[in-house]
Length: 239
Image (tube, rainbow, N blue to C red; front, side, top):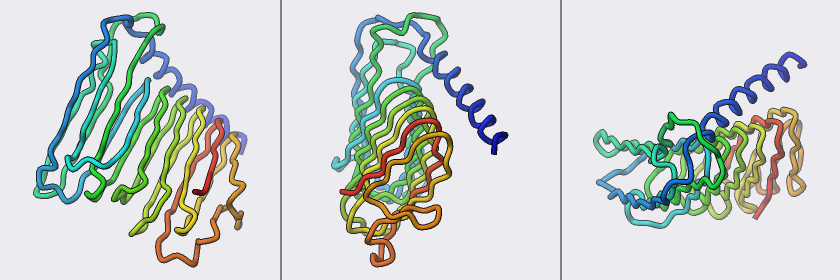
């Protein structure tokens, strides 16, 4: 166990080193605001892959397009890189933070993605969140799976509401904190692989190593959440 914790801490230090390098780039440039809208393009299914090292990631849903995006930043080299590909009716949308090569102060940095995604198309999502904050309002979306890898960031994920099919959620925690809002009337099973961090799950029942809500086993739909808890705090809430 001691060996595993030591390895985990070394991995976290590596993540923080990368994050620090991302933050020490040239700042205080003119504020840039860009919009990027993407049409649905006849898609029935999409894989969304988002990677942001620093700043804020805000996700909502409701657009009839594939995405309505607003990107705000004052480091020109951090211009988001957007890639899209399509095979028949299945698409892949990848957005990642641009790379910076110059060392600068991290003061007065601003980096923000505001993404409004389609809520009806079948979606698999991956998010890499470094030192930033992610607010993922996924309730109401047609989600199949979500995978979030965290560094020193902060995550607020809303999965509340009614769901028409099973959903799988994987969260790999870092040094930051995570709050996961889950539905009260849909079955929820949360499996936690503990690190050093704290788990707050007052509204759940602990069965063995798993946390479940009252609807688990009674509902035809199940949200399965797998959490690798890091050094930070994880909060599980029902709504």
